[in-house]
Image (cartoon, rainbow, N blue to C red; front, side, top):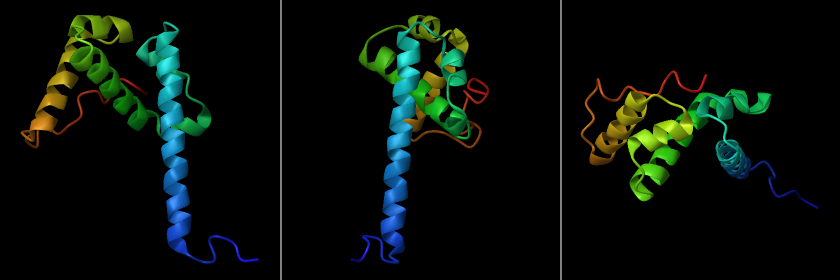
Length: 122
């Protein structure tokens, strides 16, 4: 019986993408669980397994944006509340919020395209 991926690179590629998406979503869920347990953003980043460490920065950046979007934009919490929740400096959360707004509006110039949260999840 022939296998599903009989030399078809697109099947292998699709499978890899799905695996990465599942991995990404599970990692975000684990970080969210750490925050819900009262851990800081930095502690949530450090809780990632060694398999997740190579994506720590990318996932950490995305998670930070997700929390800001959920808590500040959707939840109506102030930047100060989000900063306290994550134990991230107020100015950094504010800078990331402004970055997100500029990114959405398409008004980022080359200087602003530099991600402001670069040193938060190491």
